Length: 590
Image 1 (cartoon, rainbow, N blue to C red):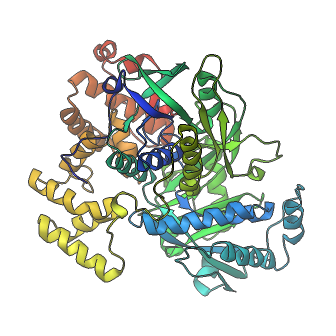
Image 2: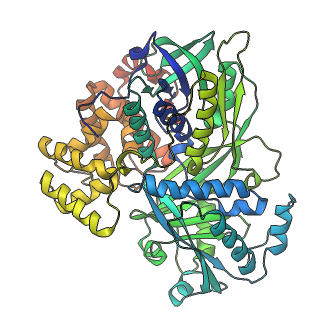
């Protein structure tokens, strides 16, 4: 990752009057996947989002890269086959961020759930019944079979509950099933890597966050810079609508057909609970609550991640993790792990996202398919160009959905596919060491060449993959001094993130460019320290710095449950900062 190359991140004024072959609306994982694939084919693209990159559902998943074991009950075999293949590809293409996740399923009965599973397969709505050994074993056998392509992990096994797990799970548990999926440490960073890869492959492509699409007439799209209020226009030959749960709203602006999507919100908790983290021994527990809801809990860095709820929502802009959801997830943990205690004091971070599901008449959210499709709105009397819409989908399958959408766009543009993304490494996944010995040598090389401590070199490798080598050298030259109040990051690293990754607001930096917030490591002092670095790097005056500090602390407290003191805004700064006259865009992402 060069620190001197032209940056892909631009402000709307920089593209005013330009023509792009394709404009993509929505910079979540699916939109960015299309952006990368089209750019790889030589198509010049502009991607925009009214919020930050990946600020919507793409930054709020369970951070699992999985095939969807439970989708087998509804007969979604093609979806599971695709998802397990894509999981295996991500393990190869992004090994710095995506790692195998050993998963354990506690089982209490032998025949339980057989009839329920059969009824679900037939499209019926059965009474809730905990799945037993036979039902789970059958599902896992199919799961292994469907996931055999590009396999990099062992098959499942079922055994009697081990003594340590007997102390962990409720007394009724008699067996455990073990299989492998994967998890992603920093999904927001993978999104940024895809953007950078795209603009390396096609230098005429560009990406603008906090940039709202106001409408489309003829071949002209009108864009508004959400930080300055400036309105600009660009022209295009095609538009891709990848705005997720906001798809129908964007479609109205673009003059297409609605409705096509519906949303369900998923809330997650991050706990500081060393006893549970140690007892899990690096595994995810995948289990059913007494009400039949499937939940997960697994060690996430030095914390424990718990999820999730599945609640229908009408307005994706008006969502939050409600206190009742926190209580529900904590109660479920108490059911499954009765020998441990859980309370709100253990919760250091909460987050919620809206899953963009295809519109359905299913009785319960969990029955709605996670499959995806690509739809096309042809030119209309007011719009001269086609709009390609991405409906549904899930994080794991973003590459496959992007490939399908890219093929449609190429057809509309009269162009041919010239390359595949299937075996293409992502960002720092290129050139990653392949085994433990090679990894150790790579860490030693980073430490030696950059003159850093081994622990710092290791942290950078885990964070940025193979790109850590050149980044570490740059950081060392600039003086790699740890932050006083968040020593996992250095001041020069934070400044680099500000200037090189499209940071516009302080919460872009704190919540999505770093892992400090989700780990519960943001204190009032740390936030003030990072605001000072961002102000210097991005040229904020004192009023802007105070206002950014106020906005970010408010978001962390009210949206993520972080225990911070209220920060008073600087009233004198408000007239000079246009974005403050509208709802904070990072709280209302496309």
